[in-house]
Length: 130
Figure 1 (cartoon, rainbow, N blue to C red):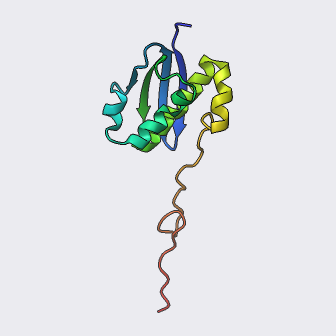
Figure 2 (figure 1 turned 180 degrees about the vertical axis):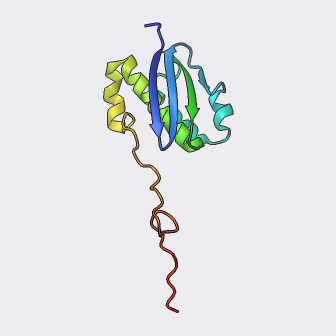
C-alpha cells in the first residue's frame, strides 16, 4: 500500500488535516518537525505520538499534517485524533487497539457561549444589596 491515506482530526476549534504513508517515521506538522512545532512541550509531544506508540508504527509511517484554528494544545489533540483515524483506515486491525483508548472519539467539549445579562457564560454580575 504505497498511496497516502487522509484523515481529519478535530478538537475545540482546531482542525488538523493528516496524511500518512509508509516510510521511515518522519513527521512534518505545518512544515516543521514535531520538536520544532511543539518546542519543549514534552507532554503534548507524547500525546501526539500516543496512537503511533500504541500501534508500534513510530518508525514505519511518514506523517504530514497541517493545522488551523485553536491553540497549541487543541491543535496537538487534533493531530492525535487525525493520526488515529488515518491509522484505522490504513489497517483495520489497529482499530481494536485505538478504540478502547478513546483515540477515535472526537472530544466534543467546546467553550460555552456567553449569555446576555451575564459577565461570562455563567458568571452573574456582583450582587449589591444597597
